[in-house]
Amino acid sequence: MSATDQNAAQNAAALLVECLENEGVTVVFGIPGEENINLTNALERSSIRYVLTRHEQAASFMAEMYGRVTGSAGLVSATLGPGAINLQLGVADAMTNSTPLVALSAQVGHDRDYKESHQFVDLVNMFVPITKWSASVPNPDAIPEMVRKAFKTAETERPGAVYLAVPEDVDTAAAGARLHPLPRNVVRAEAPSPAQVDRAAALLREASQPIVLAGHGAARNDAGKALTEFASRLGLPVATTFHGKGVFPDDHPNSVGTIGFMRRDYVNFGFEKADLIIAVGYELQEFDPARINPDADKKIIHVHRFPAEVDASYSIDVGIIGDISASLDALSTTVGTHRPAPAPSESSAMLREELDRGRQDDRYPLAPQRIVADTRAALGRDDVVLVDTGALKMWMARLYPTYAANTCLISNGLSTMGFALPGALAVALAKPNARVLAAVGDGAFLMHSQEIETAVREGIPLTVLIWEDNGYGLIEWKMDLELGEHSNTAFANPDVVRYAESFGAKGYRIDSAEQLLPTLQAALDGGGVSIIACPVDYRENLRLTDRLGQLDAAL
Image (tube, rainbow, N blue to C red; front, side):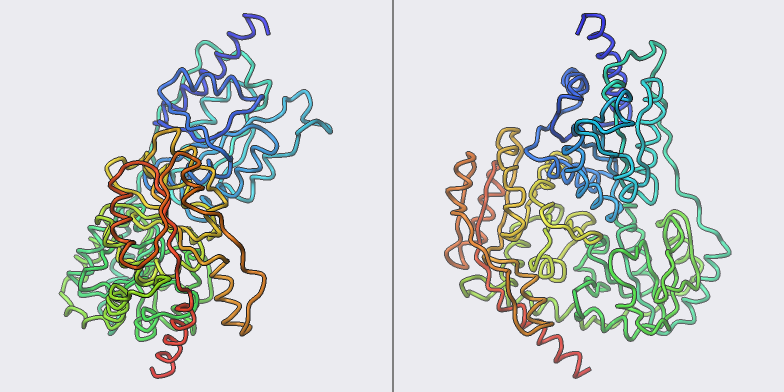
């Protein structure tokens, strides 16, 4: 390549990077390829930190979790073909979890995208079903507009994923000297309709047993303070979804716990008694509304930034569309009279009792309740735990007390395995003052354990707690429940201590129940990279569903 061509390539890449800086991007996760080396080089000369990962899928999870805790789109970059395809799981997870993410990849040049060609697949159409917008950059002049649109689309309610392909000939082309980033404009939430607030207030006054369900939208729109004041003033019990955990603190007297367990949990009983559900930021992909309204006979007030999706069990009586906090404040003021505080929640009392029993359980391998209790004891109220998909997700989601939004991160839209370990790296970068823990099953651990090397190399604090049962515990649980037996779920694990040490990290194996809490505390306080293997007694899984079944029958 001539010196003139090199300058032209740098100009096009520099324009793209300048636009990314204008969007507030401070970190990009990814792996470079031959077709985007100019972008990679331009990033190196910018203010943006490039975190080189060991797999594009892990990079996509990092970008997703960065977007989840910051509210600004996380950025992931890959090469064309297989590199871009590897991004798709994290992109789909972000989309179904309503998380802002922008994915960039290289693509073959326009001189060969119309025919059979080496490493060419139609990436734009592959990403269409799993993004809000998927497009290819036609020329350098389009970069400012397309980058602005990508971030605006990803971050605007309902947030999600966006994909942009940058063809190789665009990456190496000259950009116009007068091209600059476009000003950012943020879409603001509208004020709630007074007429809809009046209609909702009338329903609330008439209800005898109303209950609030707080979901992901309440968490990402920072509606926790308004929700707490709303529920406290009107004496309303509040349940949260897996994604809404912490937006209403679990130690508040009105809290009834988290709903979403695979069958029925204590919290379900509160919804069965309810005649009105006030759904605050709830989204249908979080869990099936038939689980709380099986007969489609309850009144529903939908409070969110956008209208409700259509579902037979989620037929809306009143929808308040607008800023969630402002909507709750207006509804509280309009209702006017204070309702009596709800009676102490049986479900929250039963959850506390179960966790208390676990805290005293010294069995080995450890009871799931003991692992949850010690995890909670090791972390502060504003520290963050990422809970991977598997049997541990059910235990953590239902039992782990959470006090602030986005401090217990779960994938419950797509429910993908393998996101927590790489995601913890991104959360540690986004929240440097919080201690961050990845709680993973041993099945999920080896899906992205190579990112231990990324954490060590990049100097990113990482603590991983492995719930070890030598199998796919959730599938085994489900098979035992439905079929009375299980098969094809067992596997072997490496020596985790030696495996961690081979990366330059610290490795621990828990040999007794009393070792877990001090080991967690030492690892989290140490600031380095630590991997902890903790054997778990998943015989407790069927005992739990048996207890819940007996309680259901009794009630």
